[in-house]
Image (cartoon, rainbow, N blue to C red; front, side, top):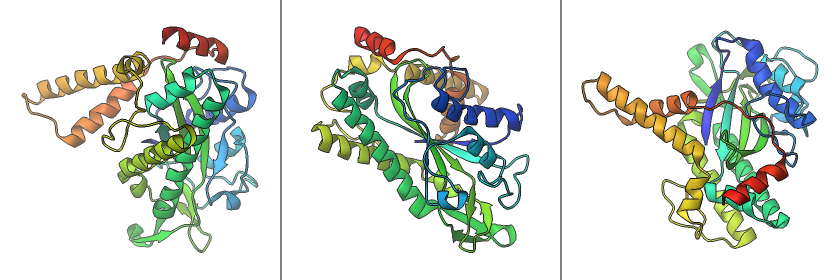
Length: 314
């Protein structure tokens, strides 16, 4: 899992809202227009965004995500009646957190290349259950806020609100099953007061949450499709029996990021007289590599056409 903090950048609030509300817009209309973080490919079989979390009741949210609802929450407004949710966001406020859950490449290929629609449906169901399991754990342990002078008192809340968007490809149009969980930065304390989510747990436990997702996915796929798994390394594993060449063939985006990371690390070493970067520096350079190596978005492609191209490549 990778967490991105959503703040108002140089382009302004309107751009942030258009970017994420556009995602909901695309999944509702499915017109292939160029909006949202994953508009480079829109599979008609992808479900509309769905609301999740114990905090949805107070927000009057259920079912599908509508652009206007998400836009209101990013402005600290109630999506139903439009009232202010506590103090408004400031210029530097975190408005939401995009937690992205990505399946191992082998699971994405099982979905992409199988000719059996039942197998594909089981992979998608396993992924969704694993995402919810990880989010449930986060909500149980990390749905917190702070009160008092300088936020000295950390307290539980009435739950999280997140918009879940499942997508099927990487930015290079390779199979990549993943879900964007856009976690809203507004929560209610036990008294009903609207405060900001204390996101320290979410950020510091990214690895734990990711491993929970991966473990739940392995359990679900083993039970549903009787797959076996290779070695678990750093909490993650690939389905046993898929050739490494096949995994590499459909990992163009990974290779782009790795190449850019190596370039940034080499530049950092040169700038620091040959010193080796520590783990935190490497992490920051890896995040920078993801941003700077991001390719442009292609136009929408019909699902059947793209799946046929995947099978031909395989």
